[in-house]
Image (tube, rainbow, N blue to C red; front, side, top):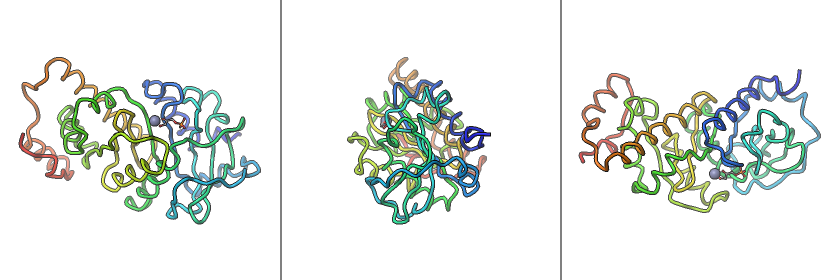
Length: 275
Ligand code: 13P
Ligand code: ZN
């Protein structure tokens, strides 16, 4: 038995591999974090090493005081997570005040958690509160089609949501709350973390202009599936725009309302404007 046999570790590693195989994680692109359950902490504890020193998070997350996370390392490649997990990821503990963290396992050859730790933890803090503890996974990737769209669509939540919903009938069912868009900002810091976590109060998806996407979900399958669905929809839109700039036909606002009723989801009228 090793920590690599523990269920949540296996699911974390599989998600990294899945993302790599999708082509969303060139070099060290993207990062993943998981807020551990009490039983995950119990299962992983026997493998914890001497804790490293406390370090500043770079953001304040009092709502996560005392929580444990598995997080990918900064500069580490998703491609290597499955073959060298202990070098690529870590388990960290957040202090009671939510200002500092310390590594309890992993990153065995040195290094630190992802440079997007402020965004991950601020998103976790928001999502933990609004989902009453249900959301545990925050995922950042660099999928090509959604990035491409940030050069040709206005950077507005309403436009991105409506265009993505129109591309595949299941989209409004998979992400009924829509997607938020963050204008281009310097990555890795508190400012972009604040902007993203503000959107996460409403949405499960935040698009980062000319950079990538953040998704939040209850578990690994739902969060990966959300990223996959949004990116697939973006791919259809890129193909459609490449064939002709205007659509010959598409799903209409009333058809979205009919769909919402049948699938029992609530779609904000903000996204169902007449064009
Ligand atoms: P890290 O290697 O620090 O996780 O950064 C990758 C990335 O995608 C930054 O946005
Ligand atoms: Zn990135």
